[in-house]
Structure formats: structure tokens, C-alpha cells
Length: 343
Image (cartoon, rainbow, N blue to C red; front, side, top):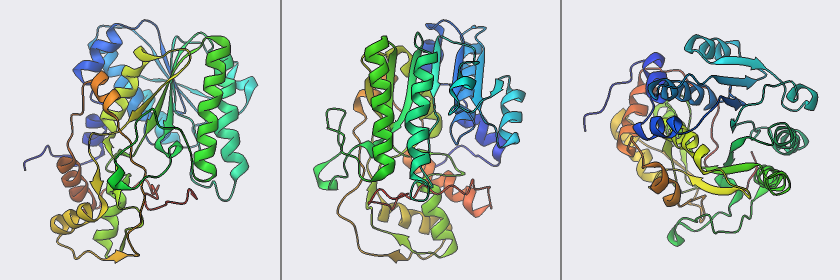
């Protein structure tokens, strides 16, 4: 199939930050500034850029503010250049959080996953103390808080994906800490009346990282592809961010959880073979096929937010071209093959 060409990071960032018509309409209906907490992570820079672009298309003079420690100066420069005002802040420090300007619209993206096995106490602190500081300071705001599909149990693929009615049953300390984050938001929502939407995200795709990037890199390098997790969900990062921003309209007290992913379930084996064909490489396998996977049913979010703009075939072709051309990697593997919760 013929797909849009993404030749470099300038084109990639433009595509990832391109607002959808539904997002422009949604932000036109909301008043006030937007503050993105944890903006310097894998998704935050493009989310803030997309929010600013959508606000301008809607005719709004809304300010978009991005908050992080900014250990990577390049992320801060990229945001400032695009018109996002940046503020350096350690969200683990309650005194620092209290100095932040209040805004009616908040997207919370702070969190820790990798390194949990080495520093579990830091994972718990980042994932539970930070939300408490934020909820106290932004008690009157609408807060969209990113969570993860890892709060759900792993399920046999034949059973099908789980929807928001499924009882959380996380495996491992990372998933448990993320459920802790949700419970903190729920507590403050119930006691303060803070309106919150919890987004349980499953595998956002950016050509520089993500489950497709991980599989493609293995195929390109001749490394075996693990089959311990045989199926997975995914969604184009630009679509995930557009839906997250639209979710500001759907914040409630107590919180509303929404699964955030694409409408498909993909097979690890079939995706690897597709990369083998595109990259003209033989595919090798590692280990037996595992019996369970994280699989989420996102029909509620897709119905509310208008579906996706990028299909799996496009993401796979873009990723293959990116990897073959030596496109930059963020060096942050998803560990999609992990099924015991140890990250």
C-alpha cells in the first residue's frame, strides 16, 4: 500500500503533533490554560505541541505549559521553539509543586517503569507520591492522568481483550505501583471533588520507540524475536495524544477509567514476519509461545473520540523504512515480551 513518507525527525514530529478535527473541536469547547506534567517523556513533547496546534486552529489564545525536570535540554528547546512555555520542577518535591501556576486543564504524564526491579522504592514514590502532590495543588482542575494496561491481569488471547469493567489485578511491582497511582487519584477525586479521567494506555507507537520498533530492530539485526507474549495492542502515538486531550471533556468525580489503544489485536509472529518481508531479512524466534498477554478493549474511548487515523500496515511500513534508514532510536525498549511484571 502507498503510505505517507516520513523521512526524518522533523516530518515525524510534525505527523505526531498533527491535531485531528475532533481534537480541534474539543479544545474549542474548553476554556483556560493547559499544563502538561511530566512533559519531557516519550509522549509529552508531541502531546504539548499537538495541544498548542489544536488550540490555535480553534482560535484560542490558550497557553500550553510543560513541566518536567528537563534532564534532557533538547526536549526543553524543542518545546520552547514550538511555543510551549516550559517550567522546571521536580514533581516529587511538594514545595516545588506548590509553586506551579494553577491551570483549569491538566494532563499528568509523570511515571516510572523501567528500573523497577533495581529501585522499587523509587517506582512507588514516583507513581504514588507525585499524584498526591499534584491532586492537592490542582484540586479544582480537570485532570487526565495516564495509567497503563498493566493494571489488568494478563489473559489468554483466545479469551479476548478486557474492558474497563474488569477488576484490576496487576502482576509485579510496576503494575501494582500504577494501580496505586490510580487509587491516589481516586481518593482525591472522591474527597476533593477533583474531576479525573484515568487513561490505561497500551503501547503507543513512535518510530523511535515502541513495540513495532523493538520487533523491527531485532529482525534488522538478525536477533531472535521472543514469543513469550504472542499478541499485543498498539496505537499511533499521535492518535493516543489526541484522544488523551479530548478526554479533558470526560473528567468526572469519581474518576472515569478508559482503555486507550487501537481497535486491533496483533500477533507478534505475524508482525515479525511482515518486517522480515519488508526488510528482506530472515526471522528467528526465541523461546516457546507464552499463554497470556496484556490485551485491552478500547471501544469506549474509540467511540467517544472518533477512532484512529493511522492503521497497522502504515505503522509497520513506516517503522521498517525508519529502521532500515538508520533512523534514531530513543534506546527505551518496551519489554513487550515481559509477562511476569518485572521491568
